Length: 241
Image (cartoon, rainbow, N blue to C red; front, top):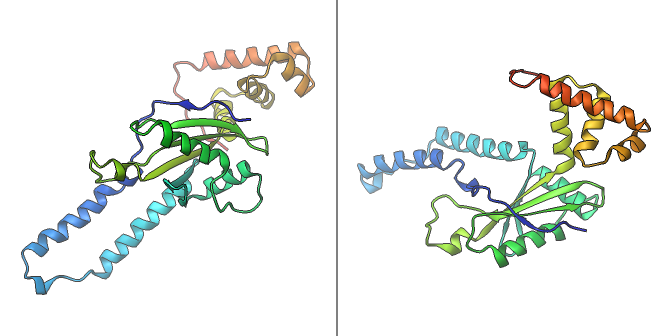
C-alpha cells in the first residue's frame, strides 16, 4: 500500500542548465570570431574542441551515475529518455523484477500522472513514499524539468519533460546512522538500537526484536542522547567506512 502523495516546497531543479555556462562559453567565442571572417573561410572544428566536448560529456555521464539518488528523465508520454544505474536498481525493487526494467513502474507512473493532472503551473514536486516488495521504502519525487534557455512564456517547452528522483529511505537512514556512530562514538549495539528508534519502533518492539530487556534498551538510548549532548558545540572530522 502506498502512502498519500505529499507536495513539498523544494526549489525547481534545473538539471538541463548544469553545464550551460560551459556550453555557452564554448559557443559564444567561436561565433565572435566567425563574424569577422568571410563565410567561405568558416573554421572547422579542431580535434582539441572535439576532445573537450567528449570530456565534458564523460563528466556529465559520470556525475549522474555517481549520484546516490536514482535519476530518470521521461517524456510526457512516460517514455524514459534517461535513467542512471541507481534508478534502474530502485525500479527493479519497485517492480519486484530481477531484470532491468523496460518501462516505468506503476508507482513512478502514478506520481508523474498526478504531476500532470494537478501541478501544471507549479514548480513544486509531487512526492510519494511506497513499500517495495523487497521491503525497502522508496521515496519518489517528480517535477517538471527546467530546460536551459527555455522562455518563461513557452509552457509547452518547459513542461515537455519530467525529472523523477528515487531514493531508498532505508539506505539513507543506514548511511546517516553510520555517520552518527562515528561522530558520537556509538557502540555497535547503541547504533543498532538508535536506528530502530529512528524507524519509529517502540521500546518494547526494539527489546523484542533484539532479544534484550526493556531496561537495556532504555540504557542504550540514554547513552546515545548523552553522547550527542557531549558533542554539541564541538567540530569534529571523521572518516566513514
